[in-house]
Length: 235
Image (cartoon, rainbow, N blue to C red; front, side):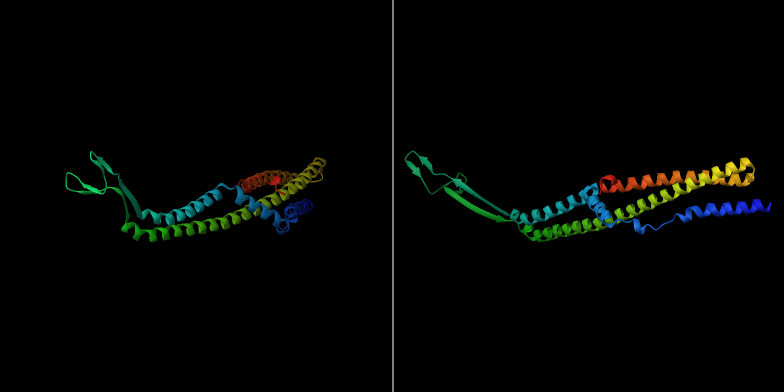
């Protein structure tokens, strides 16, 4: 009985040791140059980036439109009355309408200024410039947020990849232990409880490996969606 307990204890220690032995730091897996390429691709391909750039360009054009609208307050025109012919010859100069209004012949020029428009233009131009500055600031802020999002998803991807390696290694090792325990159990070398523990551990490790694979695929897809390219194509 003492031998069985000792065997069980050693097996449990071995099972808990396998995953821990495979743990490694992620820092060594980080490729800064590759991460920089991912950020550049996200800035180039992510649809919302184009939306922010379009808003900035629109705000810039509104500043130009507001500045050019200074000319809208001025109105100029002319009136032309040609010389009239009468039976006795050509009449130049002016004339009188039936209502007694004096009419001159030739060109008349005039200009008007809209005082209300004149007073409102400075504030309109100032508002357009403020909107442009806000659009530029929003664009810069989103650029920082996008870069941080790429970094976060890249680190999640590395962690998921590392975890997948660990889980696969653990599943392989525990499968080997379970197979060995089965052979020993069939020979009567170990009791049923030890064999059951090893078998259950192998089954659990296989399930964890499958879950780690799903997590890895999701992390990979999330990063690829952000940068707009497959990771295999980025070197």
